[in-house]
Image 1 (cartoon, rainbow, N blue to C red):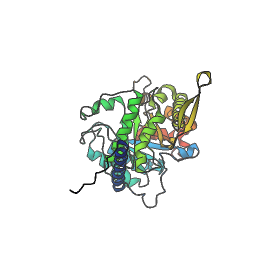
Image 2 (image 1 turned 135 degrees about the vertical axis):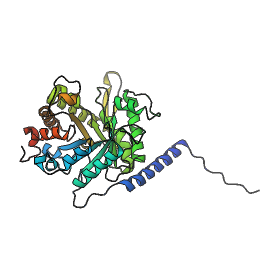
Image 3 (image 1 turned 90 degrees about the horizontal axis):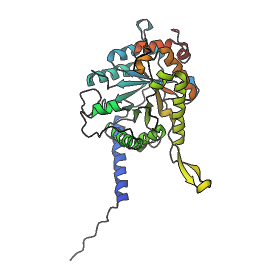
Length: 362
């Protein structure tokens, strides 16, 4: 009787390596098919959200766009009619807010079409929620497969999470425990990079005292590194309250804490010795996160209401300009502005921001 050769048994580590290789292969294929090429005649964009250099060079605006008419205003080159195209640099990033109430998939596509036609060298990011219904705002994979989309940010806050649970039964209850949040973000960004077909993915988390945003950056970067080893995840931290409540001084403190956490995240903390001789040592990790992939956020309106509950309503363009200068002075580069085009026009007219974006209009 002829013996049949016995097949080798797969151990758990072998299964894990095979699974990781398959995930990387599928992600690379999906991303390669969806990745847009650099437009002809355009300089290569920064590796992160903002380039290195002095604050005038680092300053990168992430511009929120809610409606089609907002996109048309930014695309207009007629200052007399309120156009803002002459104040936008190629390194700036447009953020299409697919969570905006009342918007539809047709609106999101039209916004992208207007911006891509007017600004072929600028990057476009989708700000999505966590929902499972593709026909309503907050869909997790909105603008999926659109070659003009450079990256995706997922809004990571309690309100959006709870709203998404009505359409996404797989979501567990919200948790603010950092260990759980860190694991969830790593898994979620992995899904977006694999099934969303995007070049970059990341999160826009709340600002919490006990969260370590350097470690969150590592969690968001892991899935991106599986697509390309040098690629890092995006993170836009919600620092609006710091600006609204404390102005430039509070903004500078918040950003200093974020940058310190990014620096520590590149080292592993080890304890050595015993008793009185016990001390903390640091060992450099194999790969690094970089603050060029970090953006902070400022919300403001043209006519501020000092006693309003929302930071968007109680922050004026003058305070937003002060917070912008403080952020850049402390080391930040990219700023996501939550404001209408009219409010952005008022911000760009302030002396503090006009020096960063010189124009005859100010």
